[in-house]
Length: 114
Length: 116
Image (cartoon, rainbow over all chains, first blue to last red; front, side, top):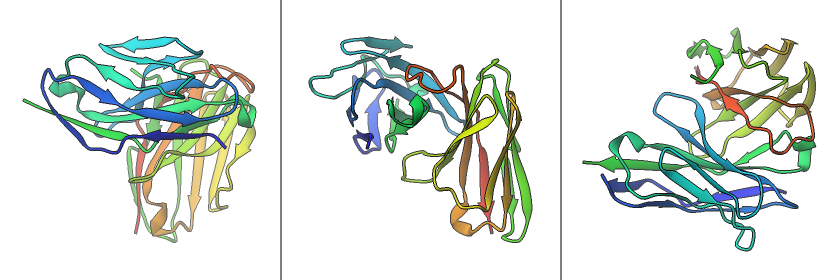
């Protein structure tokens, strides 16, 4: 079945550092890929998405490129801020279950310090 | 602003209580979902409704009973829960029906449930 693997956290960075959160997936066909962010005490918010190979999703300075050859969708940001502290979830939406099912990773907590 | 609201935000209940969680979406979507988020585990999809019809039930115990009276509202009725059911319950909605794997899901803030 479909699965998503994320690097374990927490990831602790200083403000203005470069961020990479790794995400790899297993799925049949060509899934759509997503990054969601969850701020403390809140639900998940869509951060960015990519629906086909080589697509780059971007939002709020975050980027991720859909790499089919390595089945990866790593999240990057060039300069993190304290306000980026949150839990980040990688997810895929495959073709199983009528296309309604999102499969999530376990989440990676990011802590950004001054 | 997510466009998906959930009430209550926090709920504490005993194992013999009956309670309900409510979700409302203001996005004109046709599909709605319940997820369970437990610590250190991936989000677990519980139920999917498309056009008010349940299309997926991921082997969820019968003590959880969903209800979708219309495309804007989704309920999760709870009875005789166990302490291990304590978790954050998230509702989501999306535009389309089945077969749309590019469809984006929008989440509510969740209900933090504690079962004593």
